[in-house]
Image (cartoon, rainbow, N blue to C red; front, side, top):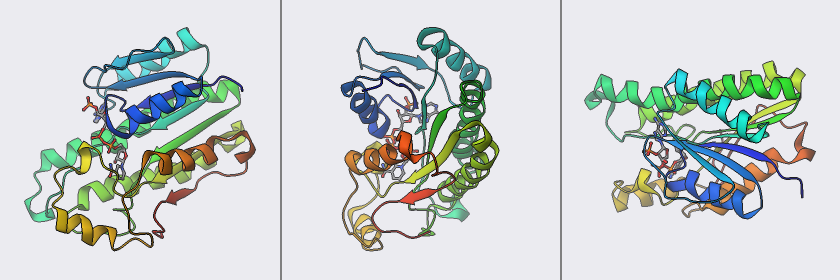
Length: 234
Ligand SMILES: NC(=O)c1ccc[n+]([C@@H]2O[C@H](COP(=O)([O-])OP(=O)(O)OC[C@H]3O[C@@H](n4cnc5c(N)ncnc54)[C@H](OP(=O)(O)O)[C@@H]3O)[C@@H](O)[C@H]2O)c1
């Protein structure tokens, strides 16, 4: 197996943390980040503490990752926050925070890791959307809109980076048990799962499976795509 360098955002807990362990177990090198510290200790893992919307800190992480690991093969833009609020009751600050992390964080990492990948003439970028966007979920307008912007970014970045043999795709998970959805009431969650073709919660394995397809060397003709899980259509 060829050892690859992964840069994964949002790795202190949840899906990002599990993906770190998944790729470390496969023998890869991983650089991760979050606003809080991580208790993941591994000789092939490096953790950085900062907010993904901090431009200078993003540049610094990419620089330090290159210094240590020499290249970036895969970028997983996983860091994300949500807030379930009727639109009329959503504070401006909440909306700004959501876009800062979900959209601007993703943009900054695509741009900075993208520069490295352009030099390498090779790279795989996978962004994180959500089924909340195609399902047009009431109560999740700002979150869904922030992830719609990630889909748009994915589609255009895919075109701009294609000449450099870099693919940019997105995965749209269904509800997956992590802190992000802990506060969603049980009846709401059941109603949400009923909107899916396959009516169950998602797992890390479901998400890793889609990522595995996108980052495979054989997937060099697959770019600008968003795959939603659970049989949800765009
Ligand atoms: N779980 C689901 O049901 C679900 C469904 C669809 C899509 N998704 C997407 O999947 C991704 C991961 O979600 P999750 O469920 O694993 O969420 P989570 O359990 O809340 O974890 C989010 C991770 O991102 C980090 N993070 C959040 N804001 C950050 C910021 N501004 N800067 C740096 N790190 C930040 C958090 O660490 P700190 O708090 O320490 O910064 C944490 O490590 C998100 O993009 C989410 O939108 C999740």
